[in-house]
Structures are given as structure tokens and as C-alpha cells.
Length: 106
Image 1 (cartoon, rainbow, N blue to C red):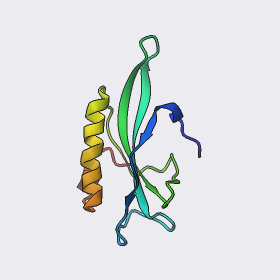
Image 2 (cartoon, rainbow, N blue to C red; image 1 turned 45 degrees about the vertical axis):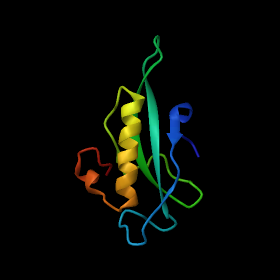
Image 3 (cartoon, rainbow, N blue to C red; image 1 turned 90 degrees about the vertical axis):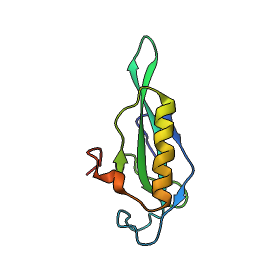
Image 4 (cartoon, one colour; image 1 turned 30 degrees about the horizontal axis):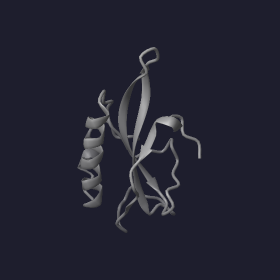
């Protein structure tokens, strides 16, 4: 697995998917939510963060370039983490209304 932001990639635990979720393909049985950091200012080591949702298998393998959802950037990791918790609650309840936002990955 290759991740472009390997050192700034923090994944939460896997969430089992419901059987009828339409966004999954063969072999994808879980959801992986990750916080990904991007260096904004080199000299100050200032990072911005986004929350990403990936379909994965039961062992956590996923394609880094096939995200279902990616949030806008957060300048505070704590706000990104709060968004990740909200996203987790929605995914656990099979509520994918957040995909109506323009951040949806096509």
C-alpha cells in the first residue's frame, strides 16, 4: 500500500459495512475513516487536515486514490477529529447524506 501522506495519515478503527450499501464493490466489507495531514508552511511545519472515507476489506486494505469522500481542509486537527467522529456516527447508521456535499469524490 502506498500513501502519499504516509507520515501524516491517522486512521480510525474499521467500521463494518451493512450488506446493502451501494458504494461498495466486491471484497469491500468495511469503511476506513482517516485524518490526512498536508504540509501548508514548510518553515513553520504547519499542517492542514482533511477527513477521508475509504471503502476497505476486513483487514483494512484500501486504495488510497479511491476515496468515497474527502472533506474540505481544516487548519485545526481537533476540528478535523470532530468531523471524523460525526462521519463515523453517520457511517455506522448507514446515513450517507454527507455525500450530497460538493466534497464527494467521483
